[in-house]
Amino acid sequence: MVDVTLTRAERIELLQAVADPVRWAVLEELADTTKCVCDIRKRVPVPANLLSYHLKVLRDTGLVTATRRGRWIDYALADDARRLMHAALPGGPAEGPA
Amino acid sequence: MVDVTLTRAERIELLQAVADPVRWAVLEELADTTKCVCDIRKRVPVPANLLSYHLKVLRDTGLVTATRRGRWIDYALADDARRLMHAALPGGPAEGPA
DNA sequence: TGACTGATTCAAGCGTGGTTGATGTGACGC
DNA sequence: GCGTCACATCAACCACGCTTGAATCAGTCA
Image (spheres, chains in turn green, purple, orange, yellow):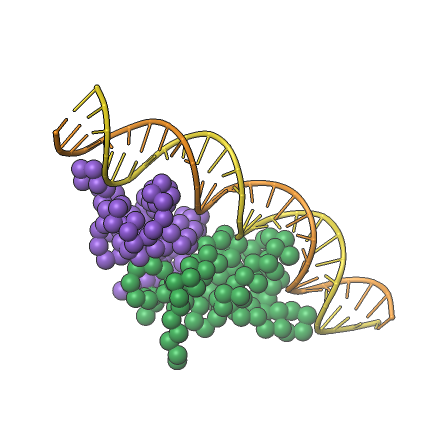
């Protein structure tokens, strides 16, 4: 697997994406299983358009992926999302779950 | 050592503290060694009062500690700062550098 | 093809975090 | 006690991230 390193600005931007109560909750929900938007919304009760806004931020930073399934769209944590989040923190070389 | 767990709000607040370009840079500078404010400022070139503002945010979230040394004040990464930062990320139990 | 469900986008507005200029505080040397 | 250095605090302001209400889009079905 290509070990793409992030620039400082990318690391900070990624942390800014995570450091929001709604997006943090979404990432927590997706940590163990893929979910569609309506399922996420059951667990993160915010207006639908607000959830869409935050999902877009997470997509744009590459932390989640979206897959259309008919009317529904399934969201999942990106494969390297955990590694990216841990690597984004300051303090020496990237470290995280082994 | 007491393994104090953070609430969700505390975890998010901690990430918000980290997810700022100035504070991120300060934490990066303190990762390997204690530094006084004027040394930090050489590496993170922002106005002195702005640096003070950000250092207060980091102190208030417990990520850094301050020690007066005559006219100078030395800042250091708190002992458990790395663990707290990794633990603050969403996605299952706290994980971080082993 | 219209109605409905699931989801996104848009424009406008607001709250607040970050910045600035000014001021204050503590330590030090004379 | 005063001037200087190192650092912090304050009040005011502003940029922008987040929220809201409205509109739009994609898929499905009768």
